Length: 311
Image (cartoon, rainbow, N blue to C red; front, side, top):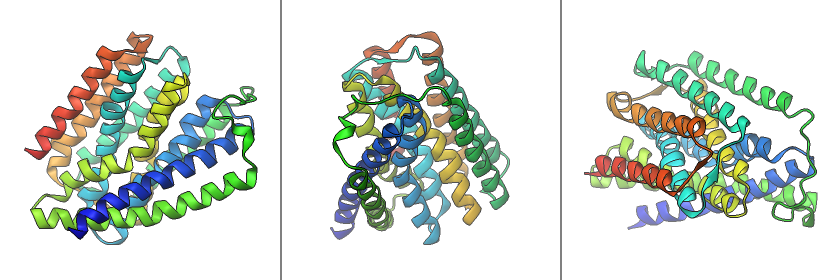
């Protein structure tokens, strides 16, 4: 079936494009002396959120139901914590003793609660509300820049960043963005066709296939970072990506075109996202690391949610 091929190829191109963008952007930032945690929370998080951004933008511009774009964001945030952090913790326990990680998790919770307030007060996220979310993103980025003062580090051990030239890394960024646009178009086109062919709602497609597909860069980044002992990048990537998904993707695209959504998004999916976010907050404040037991609980919760959606 051609539509399934589109989905598969779209996800593959998104993954490769996301990897190229993450590598190019993060290496440029690290060469500039920005600390690994700040890179994880901003540069890497923004780059790995680009598949969600591009896919949601294409869905918005094509006039697809808002459940597809918003489902992509909610589903991606759920997958980032349940699936990605779960798999990462099973591979290698993730240290969360860094005070900055706890602070950033609180900011992620704050952004999630702002989105919840907007969704609970209506069935549409308006342009004005989108602009407010995007303004919070700008404040967040400026805050990170301000907090990084005096923490600039000479990063020489992360993926041997000094071996590639600046021109090569800039090329990776450009190629990555191009692949994200092409892959996002194929993924949305194929996912919508599959949904209509099998009678699956855009909400479920957005929360599952599209969300997991666009979260592959986060998965790759977190697994590699954890395996190499860079826990601050591993979890910083997840927390930062969830923040960017809400403030940049939802905010930016609601500002372009108001996002309408179904009651099920509010009654079920929003609360699942909040529950996973709250669980991560509990972990960060009550433990020094996310071990295999905690990671297994996250993964089991995510798989249970997927079964609920598909059955």
